[in-house]
Amino acid sequence: IEEIRTSISFVKEHGDENNLILMYGIQNFPTTISDINLNRIKTLEKEFPYIIGYHDHTEATDPMSLSINLAARAYGAKMIEKHVTDDRSKKGYDYISSLHKDELKELIFQIREFENCLGTAEISLSKADWVYRRRIKKFIVAKKDLKAGDVLTLSDLDYKRTQKEGFLPDEFNQLIGKKVAQDIKKDSLIDNNSIIG
Image 1 (cartoon, one colour):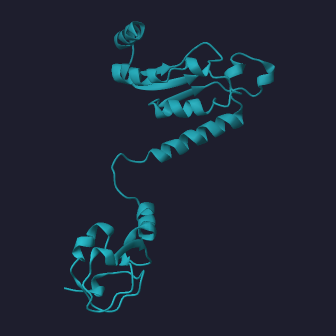
Image 2 (cartoon, helix red, strand yellow):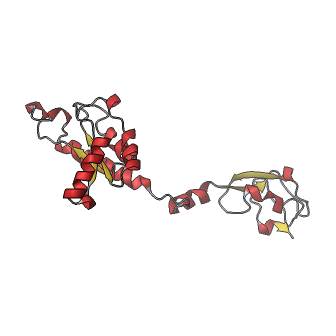
Image 3 (tube, helix red, strand yellow):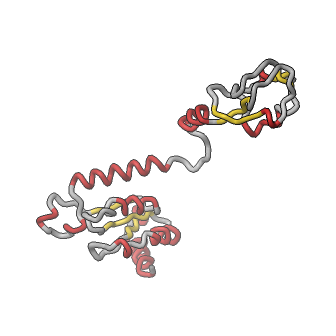
């Protein structure tokens, strides 16, 4: 890490620090999965205020060759560098870790899809969440047939998915001790129209 600091000092003195990107990668290739050490990306992030990238030398035919780059992105790498070849069988320079054009296209697609799934750190419900919630959320229903004038007790209540919204399960206290306004069939929703008071 001291060598990295020395290199950064040189760039600060002789170059443009604003465009500095630190690329992390294991240079022996093909790089074995156990040698990759993606946690070092986090270390570089903590140590230096620059964009961190990842340069992958995993064997291109390894089933993990695309996944490793997604994992690097998840660990904070903002740039991915990968060798490309039009024919690995020619065994050109770096061929063993080089992707074909269609493999590179797939890698880019997967990274963009991964970035789409990151979303926001804010905890709130999306439109899809609200649709699901309305369809799946449980509401209070009658556990048995109830007659008009009955006084509701906890044993009269059940919690099921319904087509309409009423009282949520944690709102049962609003119903206990209230009178039933009209006959309610078993499994029917209990809402404000169902009770008196």
